[in-house]
Amino acid sequence: MKKTIVFLTVLMTITYANAQDTGEDDFGAWYMYFGTNRITDKLSIHSEAQFRFYEVANTFNQLLLRTGLNYHLTENAIATIGYGYINTDGTFADIPDEENSNEHRIFEQFILKNKVGKVKFEHRYRLEQRFISTQVDDFTEHRARYRLQLTYPFNDKWFINVYDEVFINLQEPIFGQNRLYGAVGYNVKSNFSIQFGYLKNHFTGINFDRLQLGIIYNTDFRKKE
Image (cartoon, rainbow, N blue to C red; front, side):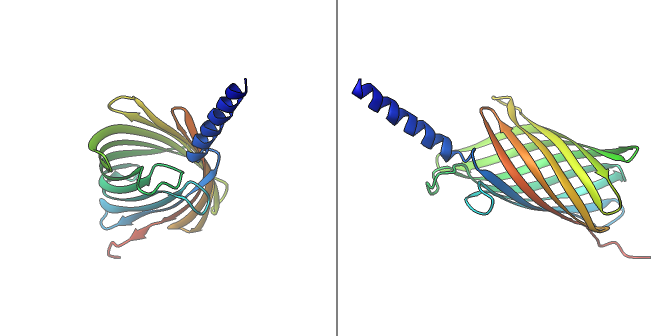
């Protein structure tokens, strides 16, 4: 009986420790910058940087840097081809380099926008080719993403923004993840806004809660008439 109790205690301790190592029980944070930098009437450059943490201000999870060339078919239809670099620490535990990975990513994207009353809709379709390197292997994966985003302005300054995005792998397993997001935003200027929100990041068997602080700053390098 004593051996059984000891065994169960050890098993529960290991299970709890492993659960804690994922960081699932901690509120993490993503700090983000996005920019659309117009260079002609038809072309712009996308710029993006994200710093993701397992906790609000420490325990590094991921660095994401992304850029792309946008072609504006119309004001409401944009096609993009781009590149991203992603460095990921895949474990919440303090195990240096054991789960680290580097990824070079190529992506193709199409955005459609429309408006119903005051509500702005944005449909984003994205394909990704992911070239991933870990300590033990190099491999390539492919996936598709779809995001439906709604923005409702209260006035010229304040707005709310919500979206849901699903990630579908083009290899097994098919389901990648789902992101559900809601935020309050403030337009500092016509080309500069800030959003503060909450993200529920769902994977198979695990969920993460993330606070998000986003800065959107757009520039225009076209020659003024």
